[in-house]
Length: 446
Ligand code: UGA
Image (cartoon, rainbow, N blue to C red; front, side, top):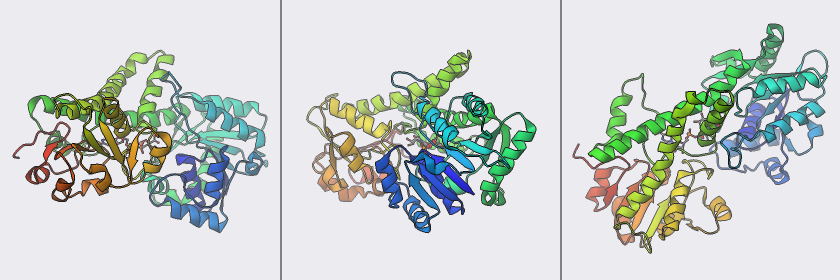
């Protein structure tokens, strides 16, 4: 099929390349010339395992092109909308200006050829009610353009796998059954290979499809904040939250995933999605329904200051002049994404409290130097930990979880370690002579 993706950021670029991989002719449209040039050369603008190979292969085959010229999307049968919906400045609500602009572009440039409608397939995370509004705009355009909401559930670090082998596909369709069936058939054709794998495909209406996405992210955020609240209780009582999580996780109604206590969640999705969800609930007059998400957000943000306090506590409350090696800046491993990163936030707070902070990250270092020239960023763990009074693992990159405590010991000035992701073995670090501190993880004999 001939397809277009409007917006070639994380979501859009990966989606575009994956659709080309399935054999479709894909044009990726973006307003950022530099990004388009880079993608056109087959170079990834971000760190994502497996993506550079996929991108190069499909650009070279000629099935995947990137452009800033909207005239090139004219013949596409489906236009995927993959632009960002960031948090508005100073407000909780999502900024939909990029979605509105993308829809305007499609309505202006798309040229339906008569037999069946052209689709706008929304993948961006939007407040409930957005798809209906877009469908009204499409109907008013006088062109045969239909709207389907097809939320994306990919995780950074697993983006290619999550797009080519998702655990479910959701179609948000209009209530008109005849029209909805035609839309379903077109999208089924596009995803034929995925559907052959028996990936569950759920058909529903617009509001449900929009809610599915924010409900999923809110649930994940709640799970993390729940375990971080338990971590606070463990801190107050001498409990070990990692054992607690393991024990409750054996109950498969609860499950083990997303129960890793630590410095909390960040990134371009979970934090802004729960806030936009609360804002939307307020607009709908049901704000009370989601007040628990305020607490989820508060618990999460509290972890950051809590971790700074933990660090300060190791020096009698004063961080001035203490050399702190921060291992990790990205919001999670296998990503160079610094958006709302707890690691970076903690590093900044430590620096504001007077600590000499040295940061290293296997992928986010260059981006960090550009974004934050005020911070001291080095390339290697060895450089970061040299003469450190405190080492903090804040993003659980494999390179950090596999560190050898005995090998690191002679390099530091004070053998203190804060394991902000609870990924190190406390006993091993203890035995090697380190003063180990996890999050909600008292060192117990058991
Ligand atoms: C999240 C969702 O997991 C995806 O399903 C969704 O498609 C995506 O947002 C999106 O809306 O586009 P992502 O932002 O890539 O994906 O990151 P996650 O893997 O969800 O991690 C989010 C944060 O939670 C990270 O900072 C991570 O370190 C933290 N986390 C995760 C924990 O603190 N504890 C855990 O147990 C798990």
